[in-house]
Length: 478
Image 1 (cartoon, rainbow, N blue to C red):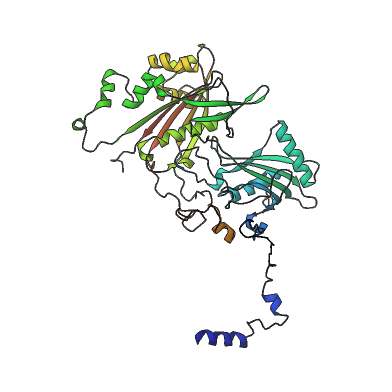
Image 2: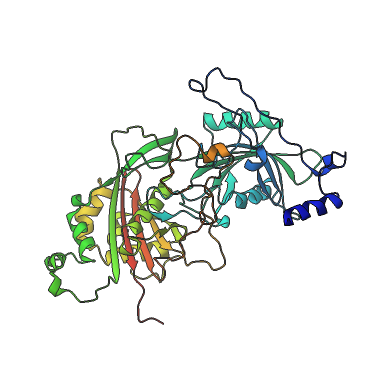
């Protein structure tokens, strides 16, 4: 009775469709009925066109208006969906520089970077880590690639936009960070609209870890004849017995320290916490270069992955996600053999550029004594006794208050076909974008911890040694 009364009231107010011309303006037109003729439902498969438009895959934001567009650069851009769990493809549209900005095309490109947060995330390279990143991490830098593939893409982008000249930009994160996608952006000024640029964006998902989950990565190194692709693999620490003893005994390389590894239960305290955790890893370049079906990374990104893997091996992150967004890698310059063995213990009297490097080497010598350096470290890094070693450091940035980290968006179900596709397994939890799908880890397992990492690299000999020290917070500190 209540429903009937409601219908009568709506009819009196003119809210029901009575066939008048005015109703056509209020009610949207129904899509045309899709009919496909088949001879037998048992032998043939129906394949209706998608029931969604390009608006669902568009990239929109302040000054950003990009819509999917198929071109010679790739297929039309699509957000994560049933057929692919990560966004990919090409988008075309306009970018508008912020009012009053003096950067021109660079300023317009910077307005696109925050829109990609959630579409692009960190690639944790097989480590159980939080892949969320802040929108401020992403930036577009000028691409100076001179290889044939980059030149072909530049020519295709110019033809697609219809401009004689376009400028290329490349998506990048903070130094060393590995992103889930490669982003290429081409811009050209729009005629008659100052501050507005025709834009083409191409996103391609990246795969850095082989299917075998082997500890090896493809590293791209710039050489005199172009880019060289090299395979770097992790070395078993049994090849460094004294370094292995230092790591397992917490910094001691003595016979007494080796006995610490075999403590019985009655020799331990009832509550025994690790004040410091040491992780030492080694990598080397393979002499027989085999091709891996993975995307390449820079040597700085390999070091970021190494530090991330080291944190994943520590006890605080044994059952929690590593906060990858807090990890920072810094280049501290080069050192000679003499500096590795004996450099100033204090930073006083040295230049500001050399002070961080000398401080890192002094920290390293607290655990690795001179005889261990001469016996196991230097023969790997400097096999000829000559040359230089690049010194890198890694640390944990303090969590930024008020800065939200955006995780990779879960794929959305765009039609009923996605919800009831043939390969869907109803026994597993749903992977579609739900209110709880973007819920991230709230507890930081490394809150209050201090990471000090010293990583030594010689790209000529193809050797890498990394030393990581994770200091636990003082429970008595206020």
